[in-house]
Length: 114
Image 1 (cartoon, rainbow, N blue to C red):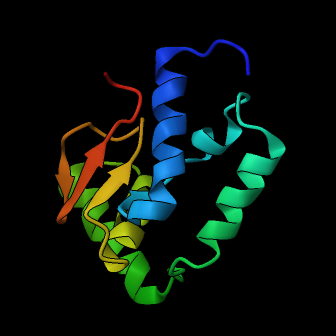
Image 2: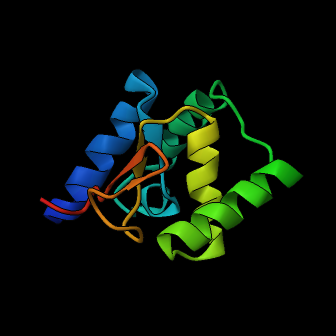
């Protein structure tokens, strides 16, 4: 495996721990990390198949609209937050939302900050 940047090492480490701890959701960027081999990504995805899936509903959209207005975030970010909230996640990993901010009881952690 080639030498990795510190943020990439942190992201890979957190990605590989998520199936064990079931402590949060992942971002697309973690799966796109070029340093992960195809087999590692496949194994991670197979682990995630056992996780609860949150379906969008009319109520979910209304909740996201409330979150969007309350926290002044984009609608799509609000949909992600409401999905984490409805799945009873305590932590949401994101580089796009404010690190350390709590949105409706869901704490945002940027995995790329040291």
